[in-house]
Image (cartoon, rainbow, N blue to C red):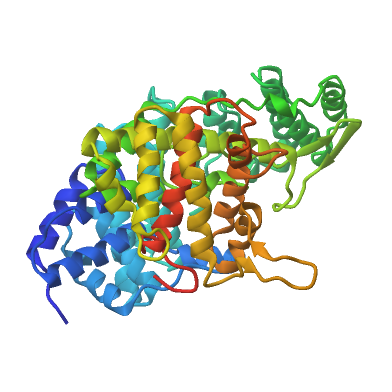
Amino acid sequence: MSQIEPSVLTALTTAAKDAVSNPATALTLKATDVGSDTAIAHRDALVTALYRRPSEAAKARKKGQATPPAPPAPAQVEIWSLYADHLDAPFLRGHLHHLLLDAGHGRRPDHVRGAAAGYLDAAQLLLAAEDGHRWPRAAQCMKRAGELSLKFKQTDLRERAAKDARALAERLLAGTEDEGRSLLVVLETLQTLGCDVADLAERAASLFARDVEVRLGFLEALRKVAPPSRHAEIDTVVVHTLLDAADTADAGNRRLYFLTQAATEANKRGLPDLRARAEMALQQTTPEWTSVRTGGTIPPAVVAWQQAQVDAAPDLRTALWLTVEDIHPVMRAQAEAEADGALEGLLRIPRSRINPAGPVFVRPPVEADDDLAVAMQVRGLGLFGILTAIQLDRIHERFRPDESEMTAALAHETVLPEPRARTLAQAFCYYWLEEFDAAACVALPQVEQILRQLLRPQVPVISVARGQSPGGVGLMGGLLQSMPKAGYPADWSKALELLLVDPDRGMNLRNDILHGLTGTPPKHHVALILQAALYLLSHAHGQRTPPGTTP
């Protein structure tokens, strides 16, 4: 077995010092020169670990996903084991032990204890810091530690997790911070560990009344431990919370959503008077699905994060790939419960619908293509376009690339040969000159050509003449629908359809722009077109796992 590379250990410790997340640490570590080929191999294995979430394969199987993440390579696991006990940063130590536990490496009790203790130590360090993100991160650390100690029957760690979680709950209840979501995670952890949270949940439900979802979570936690004699009282408060939220909702679709939930909960909990009240309000409210706003405010922290990613990139090509790392949680019904990042929960799609003719409530299957879900997805695309524009601006500020430099960064021998790469590079140059019409018109045909070349090995893109049929090449709509068959993520296939070719509910940018049916497209729409090209090229350049292979 190889030995620890001191330069890699130092680089990892330095990268983790001021980072707010594992991906941020990975970006800095990846850009660090560590010397020898062996050290580079160690560094890259640790970068892979930083991007990997513990237990993601088990969670994928539990959710019924067809293709759970592939297991790590044995060589990577061995490198993780070298560094797991030599890291001063407790969260990284816990993270590596958790990954080793998932991989079935070594002695399971050692990794369970290493992971749980690392998370608990990390929580205490976070709580002692002044970091604005410390509360949710500390709560998640305690949740992970509690789950591990309970699942693997580590009594002492379970008791420590319960003690630390209760102390954090009291601190959040007594403090001035509006951290209801963090407190809810802590209470759920305490309930999982078998602790009595009745008093904590009662106080929290009264104190954190502004966030509807959080208050409902506290009420549900309270109902689990309350005697049956109090259930009707708590049920009534739940429905009143939803009715009050509907009365103060700032958009028609939100009012409909809360009223639908109120009527549904009242019916489920046996409160006919409150159900009738919700139904009457529903009948007096016109469904205005078009009221979904197309604008959005991006929090300053998210802007800073997008810019920091570009600043940490070692070169122009890497910076370009960073704009498409994981852009479409908006295409899923709900964000993953433990998803990192400042946008978590921002684009969650309501799944309830009502019949405008009367208060008939249905909950469509997750795959249902209802109008509100699509409207929210299109809005989410617009928000991600704004984020992409921020990153593209930062790339221009930092690298000031000319046409030849962009050509070199984009070119690919088969998918985008140099002449076509030069054309796409010109689209980026037009974009940075704010010639958005020109940028879009130049980029769109290249997106179609890149997609056709990418799909050629997996699906037919050209049909030959047969009888009366003259044959031809596959058009954009058919190509996009073929992406899942070729192994590309369905999220991206649907997103690109809405972006480029859906004339009914999507942006339809490809058809509207190239057929002259619209004026000058806004900047963030053109940014999305350029990003589509970058996403497809990132597969060709190996920045993403090609279909049919394992990472």
